[in-house]
Length: 298
Image 1 (cartoon, one colour):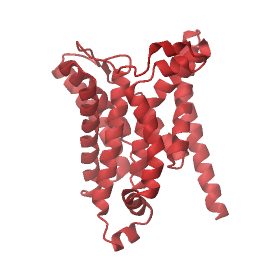
Image 2: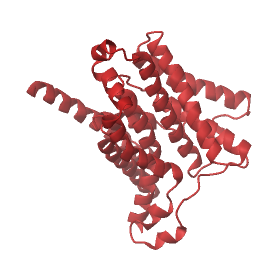
Image 3: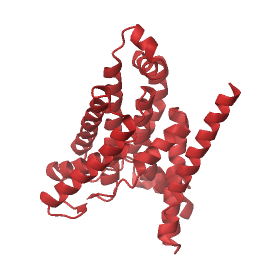
Image 4: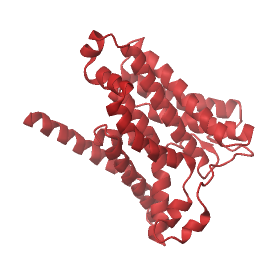
């Protein structure tokens, strides 16, 4: 029973990280290291709650969250491509700016300090019958599947083909890996970078919508809890390969589900809560060591 619960929780907790990681992976293929994924997830979560409450539906809320994230991503790209800002500094600034603006909106518009609870917020539906819970081990995970979780894993299956075998995939790789070649053949490099950053914002907005609408139905300023940075670590460790990145995201989701389970067992919650982030540091160190070793051998 415990194994089934942890497995089901792992799949659900993987979804927002996986969505943000797939978007960030595509963005990095085009040459932009997007450390502002967390900001776009936060925007997506806020928009999802507000629109779901206003419309009484989850689908429009999810789309609104995705396009809000894409819009923020596009503005972020303009700062880099047109104003020539440093992408790392701009990303850090966007994370701080978005957190501050949303905090102001919560206080000024909703008279709330940190948490937004609205009436009639519709959660994401389960797409498979609850009777599947009777299946050993994986039954609970299947019964808890929601549309965004299915979409996230479908994107893992589709992205390798899109990146390797389509024209847009070739343009992305040329812009990120061989800018001189892309310039020589007349590719609109700035436009490709802006598209990829908006794409990352779209997927991050979906990740934020999942955080807000999968189970809790509310918005909190700390809702993302650094998941955008975990997604960043995932595609770095996965070397921009969708399938490997997805497996790393699943590991992070499992660690998060495990640490929650450990907290319910009476272990110190603050200490146990550091487990996923400690693994992020380990993963980044391993990725850096691997890159140095590869350069030394080449």
